[in-house]
Image: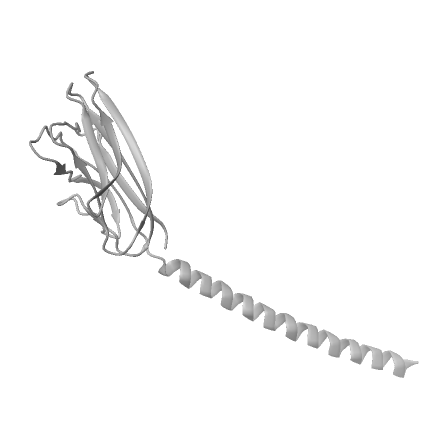
Length: 174
């Protein structure tokens, strides 16, 4: 009887060793997957900016690209406060939003452009004393594509140190 018990115990030990070996293999595979995901997430580009004009613009005799000079953040350095142009560093889907405020009875008309084509517009031709408008859009961009806002000829946009007129964009995914 002792011999039977001993053989049974030995068999259990072998089975447990096989299970432990399988579990160890699975654990190593999962660890490798976790490391791969960490690398992939860490290597994903980070692109985000937000800026305000800091001063009023217009009316002008021509359309003008708005350069938002007060930069709140510019992660990835894809936005230029000198030119007002965001240049996509990588292919991906991006979200942009902008707010245009005016204190002029002339109204305001500001459009967001992608590579020279109007995507969305904020407009107000009503002659009241103050007004603001916001628009946003999700765009699929290729690396090097340009996005900017433009104040249309004859209109005003207002800003001061309270940052009423802003431009923001960020990468959603590649």
